[in-house]
Length: 450
Ligand code: UGA
Image 1 (tube, rainbow, N blue to C red):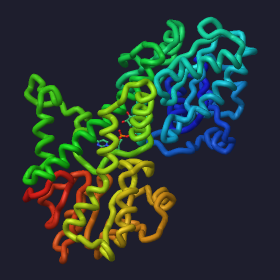
Image 2 (image 1 turned 90 degrees about the vertical axis):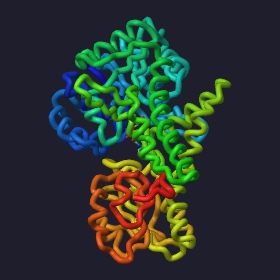
Image 3 (image 1 turned 180 degrees about the vertical axis):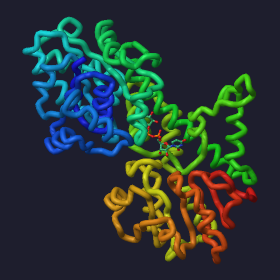
Image 4 (image 1 turned 135 degrees about the vertical axis):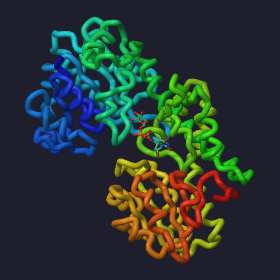
């Protein structure tokens, strides 16, 4: 099929490149001419594992990039809208979606053939039918359902794993205003043989996306609240508690040979210093606000956000238990990105942790394998020395705060072996064995001896 994608951010570009690799003809549209030129040269403007290889394989043949939205709509059968929907604290900002919908509508005015317009950006339930569809009708002077179709197709891509998640999806949700819209989306995804597909209406498709992210975020906050109670009671290790919980057959089913399936879902049921990123915080807050507008308060989600807001500070409290006065204390912060495998700092727990440490007068040495540049932009350099290696960052420090689960931090016990005086290690991800270093603290552990 001939498909255009509006917006070449991480969702749009990954979707476009992967759909091209699956055999469709793609035009990726963006207003940023520099980005378009890069894509046409086979250089992805963002880093995602495997993306460059796939782009290079398809650019110039099945995929081209362009700033010309009108020609792209004229020459394709389906347009996917994947522009940003920033959250402004009260609601998601639909300015970009509305602009693109208007532009597509203008083009549909002079297009005779049926065209399907699909919202791929994350939008709160009702947006596609109540905002996008009327704009398309007004701008085109045509009737949705008769002259063109409108669909909603949320993405479930994890940053850093986006290409793999797109090419090997767990499900594909295809919303549509009518049967024809869903069926046309079905043609787009027919190349994904054997994948579970949900054909539904637009509002349900929108709701699936928010519910999926809200569930995962709630699981994290639930585990963190349990961890905090373990800390308050003392002599309980939350990791043992959660391991015991995970052994429920419903969370880790037992196979005929006696072995267990360990669903990766369970990693969201582990305690830590909180979730971040561009999706969980924003999506959960947007759903809370949407619930309030509909007179249906989202009390569990309110709490999920409240627990998460306070969770990073637990790291600083753990340091304070050993060093009540942080002034002049040397603290290494290991990991700045919101999760491993990315340089994304948005809503990273490292932000409040570093900010609080610096405000209390600590001397911070920070290290992240790839997020240094982003971190400098967001945190500045006052009171923070950015280091090029774990070794450099932990040299001579009093305490270490482990914030991001980068695999290389597994080597910390070895690096700290025999070091006198031994620094305090505060494990914000519970990734190291509590007996592996001489002075260990972790989330959800008070009073437990190694
Ligand atoms: C998340 C969802 O996992 C994707 O399914 C979804 O498509 C995406 O949002 C989106 O809406 O675009 P992502 O934000 O890339 O993907 O990251 P995750 O790997 O899910 O991690 C989110 C946050 O949860 C991170 O801060 C991470 O550190 C934290 N997390 C993750 C945990 O605390 N524990 C875990 O086991 C996993």
